[in-house]
Length: 104
Image (cartoon, rainbow, N blue to C red):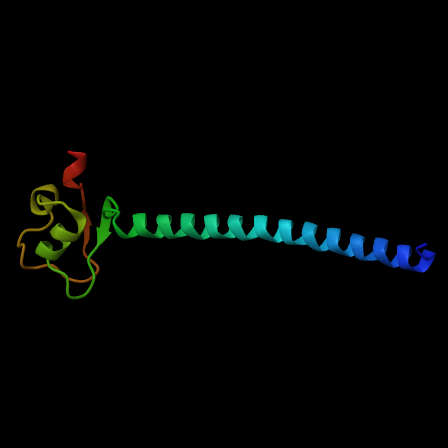
């Protein structure tokens, strides 16, 4: 015959095992959600890197119309910006209009 204390101890251990398994299940669900979140954030960051420039672009130091044209995928920057009289006279802070070639 099994003593009452042994039965009580077995029940207690059984409850701890059930609690442990439930905790592991919850943690595994959180882990997959976290990895899905991280992969989604990585996807958003990659899309931002390959996103064409905004419609209004401010020239940065060291940039030329050629580099901006390649970066923003707009081969017609001079034609769209009548305030640029000399394509070689671009300077930091100059505001230009960009229309990516794909949107034409």
